[in-house]
Amino acid sequence: MSIDQAQMRGHLPAGLAVSTSPTIHACARAAGILVVGGGIGCILFFLLLPTLIVVPMSLSETDYIEFPPRGLTLKWYSVFFNDPDWMAATWFSLKIAVATTATATVVGTMAALAIVRGSLPFRTALQALALGPMIVPHIILGVALYLAFAPLQLTGSFFGFLVAHTVLAVPYVIITVTASLQRFDPTLELAALNCGANRLQAFFLIVLPNIVPGVAAAAVFAFLASFDEATVAFFISDIGGKSIGRKMFEDIDFNLTPVIAAASTVLVATSLLLMCAVHFLNARKPNSGN
Image (tube, rainbow, N blue to C red; front, side, top):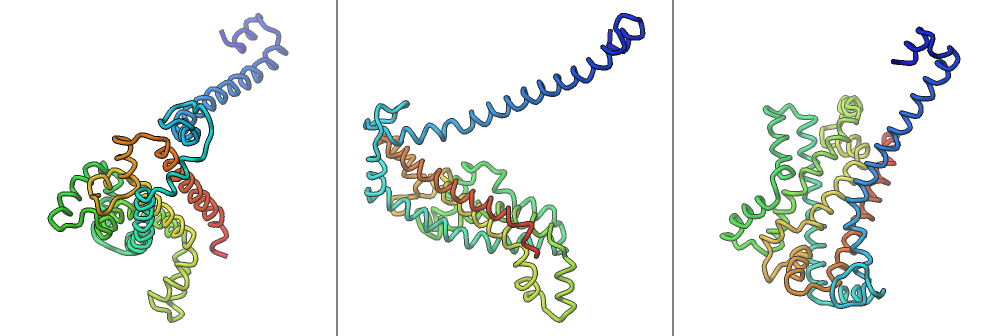
């Protein structure tokens, strides 16, 4: 029996019905917020826990990985930065990531411009094809790229990694730049064209300055997609060219020491710094058109 029905039948006073109903609704709403918020917090904590555990594991004094660590030391970071194999893999990954960022940003921006501004036939199908590397599992891409690169002797080469990581990074650029172009007012570009500017001038003088935060954020995502990539690198690496992801896989199999946790912490710190840069760029987007 509801409160209103009880009031009509004379079981509850009118004042009690009026004062109790809003209180019950407020308590139920607060309880729902607490339950949902607590569930979301537990999920986020569960997702972040492996990353958080890596940091204290990298400070362990023992020669093997354990948690909680028995002591705290920075010697494994010293081993990481002084080991020639780790530094060679890190610099190789860094060079590949920088080159991939430049290539993927240019290719992805042009593709996004064609998708948003162009009148291409089968535009939706082309957009889905461009975003395919985000959908296909990386292990399948790794096998396919190895079968394509091996006869051409591109495995372990700078150019081979550049092509493979560009394929993986371009979808992130397309999504980010497409969102920026869709928020940009196309009448500004038309006004520039009416004033005598050609398409190239209108893009560099009008369009690009207004979408540059989105392009910069896309470049950050492209860098992270290349620098943190490990699955495809496992297939296309060799002795001559080895990424930091492949180096970590090898040490997990043959030399499981806290230096792996130290390398992981360096990667996490790099990703966090770049994501902070993305957040800063996104915060400036509303003022980009002024």
